Image (cartoon, rainbow, N blue to C red):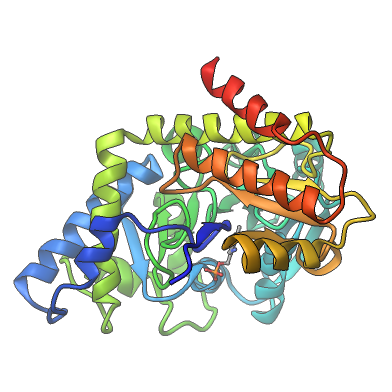
Length: 377
Ligand code: PMP
């Protein structure tokens, strides 16, 4: 079997003990062991979410968690502000529109992050806005949004702040309780080092109060059912038991490292990757880049799709390409989840070789040297 490396912003590599846990015989989802497993996992997730609020889980990908954060919080005809700076901000607005919610969009040029003052102005103009839907790391561009500043605006108003931390949870800082974020949504296959298939949401009391009044249709993604069952270590429907066993191992790693250290590690990996890209003379795509991934604008003479194909076919390396309008124009290198400094060196050295091979004149080794120097600092 060919050796492969995964540098995509989800799925991310799985630690060996998590893979081994999934190879154990499957358990009944109402067994005492599974009840204990669910309780343990939900408790440990609080540490990762940096909250005292309970966390709920759904058997779905991250988008199921997002849809739940619309269907459970809002009512028909509600008005919301959606920050759209890429594919995933756009997804918030597509979900809201599908549910008949009025969207006031804030369109941000791809690669940029929202200016909190723009959000503040809109909230003053529209005091009846029920919620602001934001994204911690807009994975399609690599941009980080200033959620702390947005929370400063919403927590003094009756407006909720709902944050998609699907990719960035555990990599970029998100202090749910300290900052006063109302809802945080995430999933298993990114910073949480578990295969795809689980979504998570943490809600504070303000958000639970809004749920009391919501009249949008919901069934499988009913947050209240998931939450109430979770408190008992139970589930309304058969969950992805196997994934929960992997998640427990991954959470043990994060809890042992400590979430603040986990975020600091991601920050070091991101800093070194950015230094490497700069040393290669290539521009970063995001103006305020996240710790989750680094997006690199490719020189126009490079065919991004051909480059990614070469990297996979010849080197077994998967980076992510650009989505929709960015297709073929950017490369996204994730340094997310079960990653350390050596992984970054592999990602950068392969990147250099691939670029050289495709005919781009770069100083071979310059990126690796810059990354090594960043790590040494
Ligand atoms: N939001 C963000 C920021 C993401 O990165 C992703 C996945 N790339 C999603 C939402 C959607 O998650 P999923 O594909 O698990 O439904």
